[in-house]
Length: 157
Image: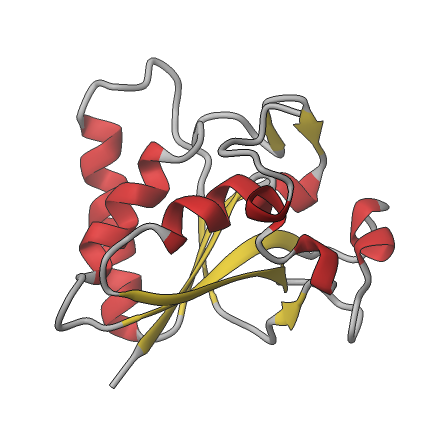
């Protein structure tokens, strides 16, 4: 049986690529969540007016990789202290967010956030939101496995 985890950590291309490499992850899909418009397009989300975040929805086998391990990868994949910004990308669609699918994920996300805050790794407060997952919309096909399709291993474009 598989479970789902959904993370917003800026541009979804690099985050998707990182999660695809994790043993126990069967799929990682780029998409949008958390907004008010049904079936948003990339162009819609880029306006910043729909309320959606660029996210990666991860399908994983909890017998092979724990949700807590996925959270560790999430924290290491971006800067959780920058509000609505990751690198050159800015806007609410690039916010740091964990979208939980059940109460166990909510508790684990909150614990993980507290541990990350108290670790001393960041000199400014963590701004990551922890929110219930809503309808996930798969991004357009050209966004899926984008870095892999273009022979890149990171979002340094």
